[in-house]
Image 1 (cartoon, rainbow, N blue to C red):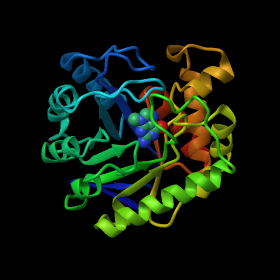
Image 2: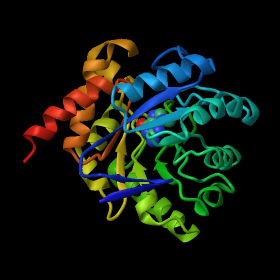
Image 3: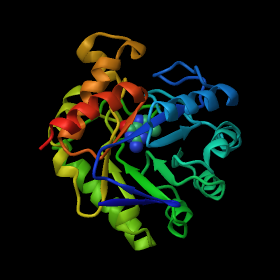
Image 4: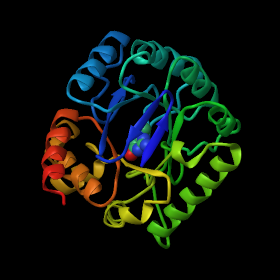
Length: 273
Ligand code: 9MG
């Protein structure tokens, strides 16, 4: 199975590692360590050296409680970093929910759009449809500002799966073929610890025909709840979570700690029958 992703055709025969580059002052995971362009570029280079298969560059924090960022500011944060890598050997994804920035990023060479709102904004489907870019359709209940206030589901697995099925149908109708689509249940986005654990246990149910599956658990609050540790000390828990996700069907893992995740996956790959 392959993922068509801009000028790349990515084999999904082995799990892929997407390295996170937050160009934000307020990310939960790194506390704004890579906010200026030079540090973000240096960080992205480090992730590539560590073996990242893709980079995900974002300029708007999506942590619980985060406030929205204006288009102009998000563009100022993201585009210079993206442009530094767009011509290279590692596909670059833009993490945004704004159709204008999707268009600009793809024109600047982004190979994927990672949208926590699954292309639901007006014009978002069209921004991606007529291009070669892949898209990650993620599930979120509510908005980052309030999503963790009282998340509630009758059956989290079937509700998230149905939603992603509907977003795949909308994307296909707009002209985005399944081999350009990735789905993601959105761990921590309007979900309690119990919801997240239920989704991780049932991750295999999100392997939908012809569509790739991504999981992002890296350094998230659920791992803090389970270990009692701060985000920067959640590397072992994040690696364990990435392995469990891959074992349960994820083909792409979105992580902050690329080297540690690559090592763990190398062991997994060698043992897997
Ligand atoms: C932007 N972002 C933060 N967490 C994420 C996750 O789990 N998945 C995806 N696709 N994007 C995420």
